[in-house]
Image (cartoon, rainbow, N blue to C red; front, top):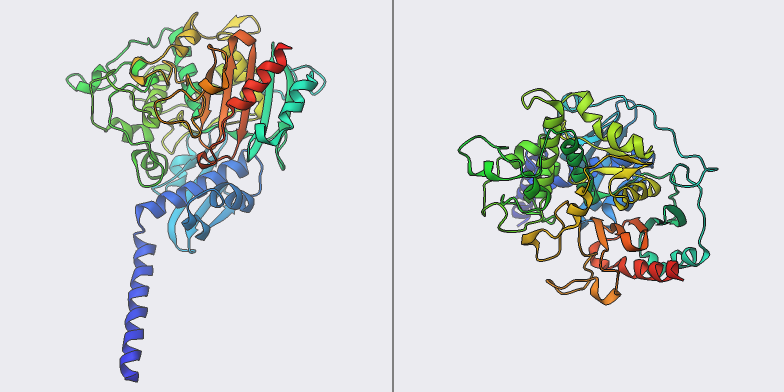
Length: 463
């Protein structure tokens, strides 16, 4: 009997050892996604936002994420400016590398040196003076009634990290969460998609692109019918799964593919272009590649520092967005779907830029009418989405699918939104000359809706 127990125990050990070896040599793709996600989040927050890596792992990755992330460990190499992440200390092999100008990139192929090539030395954008009123400086011209609203935790929402209210071009109220300040760069997630549309619009200004332009695939390929406008309005017809609970098209692109645009460009056409709306981060990464190639003037050439610096030089510098960074992937594609960091006040500058129809300090940076076109409803979206990567509705909360979640808040009819994962939003209300930025770490399951804050602010500024 004893010998049988020993043999059984030995078998369990061998099976366990075999499982461990398998995890180490060929981990499941879901573990690789988790490890690369953890490495990327820690890398960006350490080297862009100046936060502590272990705090980022605990607060931003593990606390709101899947329970298995509790077993993720990270190592930050300050000298090489890399972050490695593994489950149980040996599985997953997540790797992210920081580059000047282009932030952090996941290197799912393990080639940090290749990923590090895509960088540039940003020209200096002077930080805003605290003694000069916003937007040139950072000085607040407080509206006490609005400031009192921001102090209400129910309106600010759980996990709030930054709020700024701009009325008639002035910063009238702001609030920051514990551990965060006006100087803290924060991830906008999918608010970056709107920035991608703006950067494409700048290539329209330059005459290098047009909204109805097509031919982004070889002649004879049905996907060559897809227009720039259809990519911007999420109506390309390309197959895409935006799910984040498993290895989907979205998670594969972001965490398993060194060349995100090349991966998305291989996906098949599922519907006729323009016939169906399907929210797609992949489509926006393709949009980024298209405007990058147009700006570079040669679709076959390697991505140059001059192209990588365009968001900084053409958008961030004129607006005084000294903190803003759009990160590039491991092959130089700017990840226009998801990865822009900026302070709360700099995100507000972008919202104000849209409110002013693409004009800043008297100079036009976007085509006349481009911003109003961005707000027009994408025909296939059922009223939910604009033609320029903006939302016509705010976050859904518990609102039943197919209904406008803004209705019960009685918001002005011209309100439109930039929105991002985990509670990022910018509400733009042209009729009230109002921009309200709300950033944080607020998972959708909490059902927070910034519409209540916006409705209260609208009433306060009208008095």
